[in-house]
Image (cartoon, rainbow, N blue to C red; front, side, top):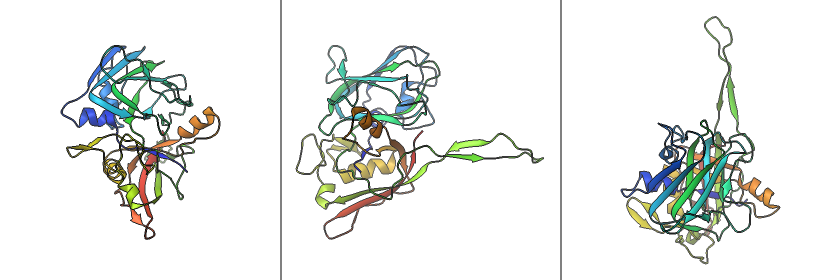
Length: 308
């Protein structure tokens, strides 16, 4: 199945890992103390962003244009009637009023969860659609003082050349563990229910060595692995090839994996498929790609995945 991986959180790396940070302005509803917006871009699921209630507008201004094609959210309590609106501008003049959506109407500029199960949700646009963003405006829709987001990741989904093969656990439902505890007299205490991560075996296969080392940039190339932005790794900024980009970020930072980038069916069916994703961390270590024939390379690595 054709999947996608969001490995580089531009919001996190631009703010937390660079000397020249983007400016972040919050207007309308105010941030709650201890729940500022930067908490949802720190890649830490233990912190979150809340507002005082009402509609907040967060404007992020970068030092230069950043190319993006989608986002993902993990760790939230938003219902299907609550969400965020995302707009962008390629420069810093005038109002921020560009819709952050694709031309197929699978997505619109306002994003909400599909249901009230608090599952991961986000958007990965078409192969050829990406946006040069100098400013991003995020507006909260329908939030109250209890609404929160823990992880917001925005950047470039690696959405070509990612063919996920079996064995792989699809994101059907979030598994839970129920432990019955007793006190010193043997009387039952309240049950302890917690989320259990899925052990995922992510298999990316049928590459040539040239595919893995193909430079990822803004324009179409002979290889399907294309249209990715310059990234910064260990102080070096350039267009990194797929193997370096995924190998570096996924081994060090949490990432999102989309089960199936559906390109068929009704718009609702396509969106429902693309909403099936995991928030992941590498399980122990990340394996290198290996040859399975004289010319074909498969890349398989283990991860722990959460749905909600």
